Length: 439
Image 1 (cartoon, rainbow, N blue to C red):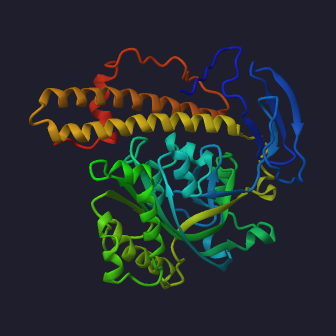
Image 2 (cartoon, rainbow, N blue to C red):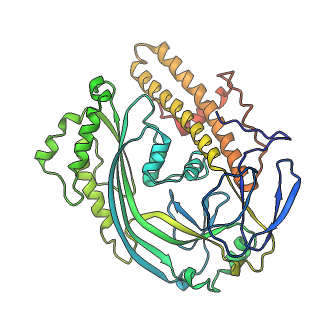
Image 3 (tube, rainbow, N blue to C red):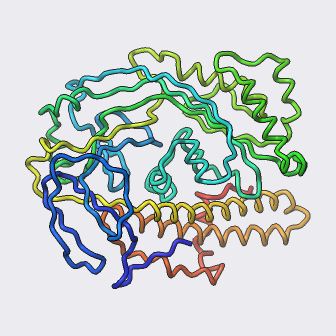
C-alpha cells in the first residue's frame, strides 16, 4: 500500500519537481520544513532534458512543451492546465484568425497481447504512466477506446488477451504558433485565464485517428488447463490475428476455422467509432476490424478531420502574452519512482475489486439455492467497496493537492482497515458507481 504522511519533519512526496511557468520570473523554492531555501531565475532559452535522479526533493525547470496522449475529446487552440491535467474548454484566440496546416500521417497497426495488468493496458494505449495515474486518481475521465483502462472484467485469476487496432490519419497544426503568437488573443481569455494564471499551455497540434480494442477473457469453465497453461489459446489467437484483413471482411471458410474458440472467451469492446454490430465471439473480429478501419480512414466530408483526437502537442503560454502578468506560478511534477509506486497500489486495489466482482457474479447464480452464502458474499463485497471508494477519494484528493499546491492536509498512512463494516452506511451510494445492480 502506498504510504504517505504530512508530519512536520517529513517530505510529503519525495521527488516533486517544480517547473517555472515563465522563463525569467523569480521562483521561490521551499524545503520540506517550509523554510525558504533560494530564489532562482530560469533562463529564457532552454532545452528539454530527460528526467534525472536528484538528491533533493525539489528542483526547478522552465515549463516545457508537452506531447500528450489524450483520453478526452479536445480541439486545437484549447487552453490546458498542467497542474490539474485538464483542458479548460476555452480557446486562446479567435478561431477565424488561426491558420491550420493539415499533414497526412496515415498509419495502421494491429497488436495482440496479454493484458492482465494496468501497466500492460497503458502500454497498449500508448498512455504515459503519469496520465494513467491521473485517470485512476479521478482527475481525468477516460472516453472512447481509453475506457479500456478502467475495464474491470479481467483480473489476475483469468487470462485476458487484447486485440488492438490503432489507426492514425492526419495532423492538424496551428501555423500562428510557429510564426510567433499573434495579437488576437480573446480579451476574456486575457482577463479570466492568462491574468489569473489558470492555464499553463495551449493545444498547438492534434494527431487524429482512432483505436478499436477487443478484450477477450478466458471462460474458466470452458478452457482446459492444457489450453491455458501450454499457450494453445494464445497460438490460436495469433492465427486469428494473422487472418484479419484491414480492407475486406473474411469469407465463411476462414471464419469457420475459428469456430472452436467461440465458447472459450468473453468479449468486451472499447472503441472510438460507432459499430454497426458488436462482436460477441472471436471470429467476429474478422468482420469488425476492416469495418472500423474503413470508417476511420474514410473522408467524413466538410473538411472535418478523419477520426478523433489521439495525440496533442501542448505549447506553454508564450512570454509575449504573459508580459503583463508578474505573479509567478509553479507547476509540480511527481518523481517517476513514486508514480510507479502509486500505480502499483492502484493495480492491487483494482485486482481485489475485480475479484469481488467475480465473486458477486457467481453469488447471483446460486443465491436461489444457497441464499446465506450469497448474502455473505454480497455483504463482504459491499463492505470492501465502501472502504475502496473512501480510500480512492482520499488518494485522489492527496494527489490533486500535491499537483496543484505542492502540499496536502490529507494523510494516507493512517487508513483504518480493522473494521470491515466501518463504511457500511455509505456502501449503497458507493455501489451505484462501482457495482452492477443485482436485480
